[in-house]
Length: 136
Image (cartoon, rainbow, N blue to C red; front, side, top):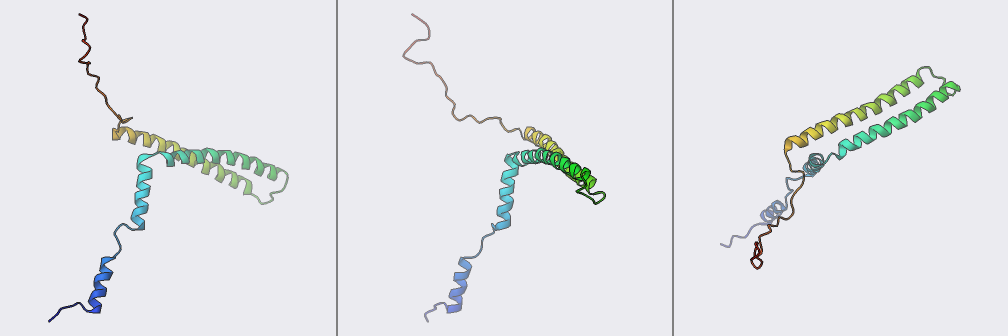
């Protein structure tokens, strides 16, 4: 008897041949984050810059809020000090975390003992056989 696969067996074989891999979106995202955070201090630098820029913005908004409070444009009691406190300490926290993160990153780099540079090509200068090293 000729044993040919039935239609359902044929479909089962084809569907299992194209099954989904194990490297899904979550693993790809985790791999990308590891690549970013393991080899660069860019996120820590961005945190420092965000804190510094936030401090500047907090100072500018503080001047505007104080001016609005003094001119009577802000009538709600406690609004001005609350906004000033939130903006100042939010920016200060970001700046402080960036600085602490930078110190931790530097300590991690030292503990990894990676070379500061990679030698691309090494050349050995052997004495030329045609020219003697001592004069005759």
